[in-house]
Amino acid sequence: MENSIPLNLIISEDNLARPSERKDAAANRQAIMDAARDLFAIHGVAPVTMADIAKEAGVGKGTLYRRFAHKGELCLALLDKKLQAFQDGSLAHLRQMTAEHQSYMAQLDYFLDALVHFVTENLPLMCEIDNAPTPLENLVHDVNQPHYWQEITVRHLLGRAAQAGEITPLIQNPAGLDLEYLASLLMAALNARTLRLQLEAQNYTPERISHGLRQFVRQLGG
Amino acid sequence: MENSIPLNLIISEDNLARPSERKDAAANRQAIMDAARDLFAIHGVAPVTMADIAKEAGVGKGTLYRRFAHKGELCLALLDKKLQAFQDGSLAHLRQMTAEHQSYMAQLDYFLDALVHFVTENLPLMCEIDNAPTPLENLVHDVNQPHYWQEITVRHLLGRAAQAGEITPLIQNPAGLDLEYLASLLMAALNARTLRLQLEAQNYTPERISHGLRQFVRQLGG
DNA sequence: GATATTAGCGGACTAGAGTCCACTTGTCAA
DNA sequence: TTGACAAGTGGACTCTAGTCCGCTAATATC
Image (cartoon, rainbow over the protein chains, first blue to last red):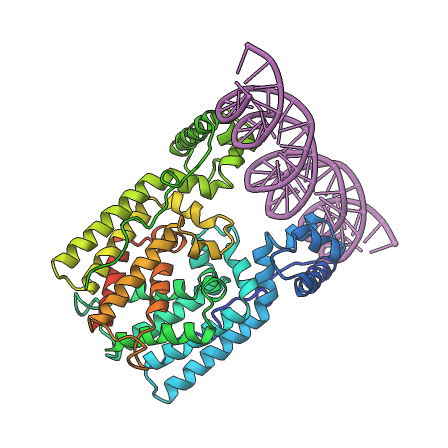
């Protein structure tokens, strides 16, 4: 059976049909993103206010908020290319592993490691995306949210692993694993806030986190 | 070997030496907490502002903030008695289980279940405590934070389980478990925000969460 | 009871998020 | 080209969190 993860789950800001954005609007969008990137580079993400960004970009607050509903959305846009590249890269790698007949649990192992490092490397932006006043359901159901395809991918891999007999799901055995919940649990472990706590307050290294998490997942295979 | 969790890890607001609080100050503290409880009961936690609470309590904002640095602290105070009771109850239960020679993993199983239900039952307040602009290290190191004793307890149980040979720690075996990290992971799974997402956006029941998490932990003994 | 000390008080104030709306300007069809 | 009209703009405005500080009054001492 073939791995059926579609190639482009993300409908990125760039790919997304933005049917009619006027030239001036597009220019402002770019100016805003440039300004934000600059200010973030100088001062870090958290202390920069939306007003700062508007001022630096030379636009009014109204314009800023017309483009980006809040700081989280702006951060998501800034991360869009990287996120897209990460998704393409990791999905390609997973397909490659499937082609080489590597186990789905091995694929999960790879994906979790990649995810730990990606989130770690983009912690401040990812935290901001996380803190955004997103209506909650969006986080889980909005295709633009990184959370979305990541959880789907984890779910998918767990499902395949179960089909392949690498793990025992609940459906087959009352003592088996609840794969949906398991995916949700892994996403909680990879959440930017969680990772920030572990990295900054508990002084774990990304390697330790990745290793600990995967060690843990490895127990599931028995 | 005896279970050595101290009886009173929490230094609760009530127990905490508040050496010199004037009569009027104490009365105001009570008035504020009563007002908050009332308003939360009517409108829910999130939509009530600090100004609302001050007004309802008949005090100025300065007074409110003198007592409670932010909404999270106020919510923590409101939950203090329940939290204390929960802690006392669950630690007593764990001691009882130890006395009956039940395994430490069974104790962990019990504790996780109790925690899922406690957090679920107090979700709005717990979320508010969570969202508070706590300087991050505090969350992990401040004895007043629920997080603190909960993680310590989980850590303790895992440590005992390892000593008792119920699980294999990293120290004994390079393929073993990183118990510190594991405790941190379980806390992430029991985090109010995580639980809210699962309960409200993904429509899991508390029972499913508890079952899924414990099933998962059970694999570790495997 | 008078006085000194100092915790406590409350509301004006600052700062950031996000909204609104009167005005401007690109775009497109004629 | 031109005119109509939707899209876009900017900054004043509102709302909330949280701070500050001059005034008030409880308590401790004599």
